[in-house]
Amino acid sequence: MLVNSIFEVALDQILDVAKRFSGALESAGIPFRIIGGLAVFVHVEQRDPLAARLTRDVDVAIDRRDLERISAAVAPHGFHYRHVAGVDMFLTGDGKARSGVHAVFVGEKVRPEYVEPIPGSVPVRSEQGILIASVADLVHMKLTSFRLKDKVHIQDMDGVGLITPEIEAGLSSILRERLAEVRATE
Image (cartoon, rainbow, N blue to C red; front, side):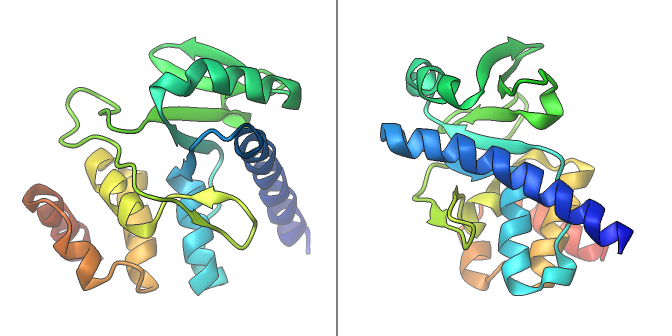
């Protein structure tokens, strides 16, 4: 029971951050999509709740040109913009990066060494009411980043059948190679 309670509290907290941030952007008419581990969690949880892994933070893909409008829109909801150590984020009252929203920019590479930029296709609305990146975009981003946690997210999505042949066919050759590498380690 205690573990379930801790998990439920953590899930409620991260979803609250995502919903407050998302609600502010939707009200202001600013395009965005929740990405990263939370979006993976939501997609996987819809297929198999027991296969979903909770993430620690919220990531969002936005258009860089909207940064000032976003800052103004989310400020009344308890978020303040910070650019620290090359990372753009919107922090909540506690000022901790792990409880804020980390921003990346559609059409740009997160890091110069990344092979591809953040895709910007149309988001989907989750059962929780937030706009999240499509599975195809998440696969693209996770294979581009290709850190250990990204590989685990790929395994989670693949394990519940979210990575379809159509999604795989839409990947560049280097990302298809990375997908094959992840599958070979399962």
